[in-house]
Image (cartoon, rainbow, N blue to C red; front, side, top):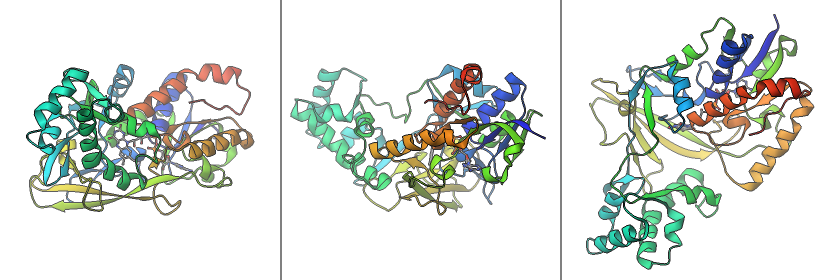
Length: 384
Ligand SMILES: Cc1cc2nc3c(=O)[nH]c(=O)nc-3n(C[C@H](O)[C@H](O)[C@H](O)COP(=O)(O)OP(=O)(O)OC[C@H]3O[C@@H](n4cnc5c(N)ncnc54)[C@H](O)[C@@H]3O)c2cc1C
């Protein structure tokens, strides 16, 4: 049998396109993943104690996009959930993002009132200011606030997470870190924040349940004969696709250390960051995220490490100009495959996407398919 489409990768990008192609175009899809499970990095599974654990680290769903929310709501009902993070600093658990309570906890008691007042005078109540703006402010008191947040909560965490100082990273990464002039301690401020009422895995299973979609796990791209499909969607890494001929695209990886404990609750927030102590960056207690009730609890520690192809997973593209140039060069190699290919997703685009952004990208690409299919002379290549 020849499928209309081969889709490589059964994460949010691949499953969204498979679902759209089957339900809207009524075409056949062979959806493959080399892993033994569906869902890509958003996969979840029960551990040996019956606790639902996110296999590739904690995944919290949040979006500003009504379109993405409505689209995914066809495959799951939701459990309302607001994520909260604390950072353990000088023995105190302070809210992250850094807010007025974090400032009050970490600043000298005599300094807090004037810092607070100067911030409100400069930016107004409830403002959310990128830390870079505070660091460049004319008022030295406001710069002191920025220094406090930067040094106590942000600098060492970034160093651990990336193996680079904030200055070595793309300035956009530092510029985005917000300081909140309110007591709002929710990690995200998006209008839609929730977790699948069941599991991510059941959401994915519903997305691909059409008889027009054949799901094949434990299957590598190179396992599928070229005669088996007409068009190709590829959500894996481009450097791997081309045998690393231009060199490997750098990623940051993580080791997850999962521990089950015979207690109801381990910590007072879903995630606790350890910016200045320990080798791990953070501990997440899974039951907060999933809402599961059980006598025991499972926690996940995250240890950042360099990515080594074939040894560990490529998780975070490292946002530096030289890496983006290398990715561009691989994109320019796509025509040499000699057949239509659409490349998308966090690996093929070499871009960090939240789950909603991966879905939005796949929906946008699907909506542009008629134009691409009629105008494009193969190979097709989607622009991001
Ligand atoms: C630690 C961590 C925490 C995160 N937390 C959040 C969060 O809280 N909220 C949020 O919105 N987002 C979060 N994300 C981002 C989220 O994981 C991504 O948005 C999402 O996984 C992107 O989906 P994707 O389909 O593009 O890629 P992936 O999920 O990576 O799927 C790609 C799939 O392709 C398969 N594949 C690749 N190459 C081949 C090949 N040659 N043959 C066969 N199969 C192949 C891989 O096995 C993989 O399953 C987090 C990411 C990480 C790393």
